[in-house]
Length: 229
Image (cartoon, rainbow, N blue to C red):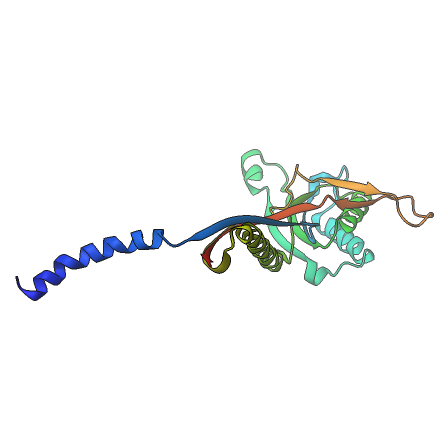
């Protein structure tokens, strides 16, 4: 038989033998979980201004002026935290029914905590701007927190592996397989906003302080370690 033909016949047999050899590696597999509670620090509100929101014929421009003045009084950085999300008018209604055109403007406001969001809602409502809704919430340091939790979970997995291997007189060596799953911060949406109120620290301030309930972020890892003697 020719040498190159013999090589072709032996190669598949060698490849099939590789997984079988790996399956005989002594190993120990453990899982561990790490979690943390976080409170959203990015809150997005939708503020919609409509001319027909008022009994009197107040223009969108007047409502916008009221909104800006109110936000400035609450020490909100309008340039950084407020942006125009939509501008439209009821032109279709006007063409079909010959009614007056009603303009609309929608803004998105980014805040850092629920207490400020509650104050914004209350202050805008006093100015006749009640169409304010929660868009979403988020946690700004989610990626860094996940990495930290993954490190904690891997350390726990190794501790468990050592505890299991020690009575057997074996040593935990290098990891040969690692996988992870996580439940990231989803945040709250409209109709899902869960908040609680606490009594204000100042006796002169009767308004309760509003906060979001903490949200759990969890990661789980599965690690397979090689066992030695």
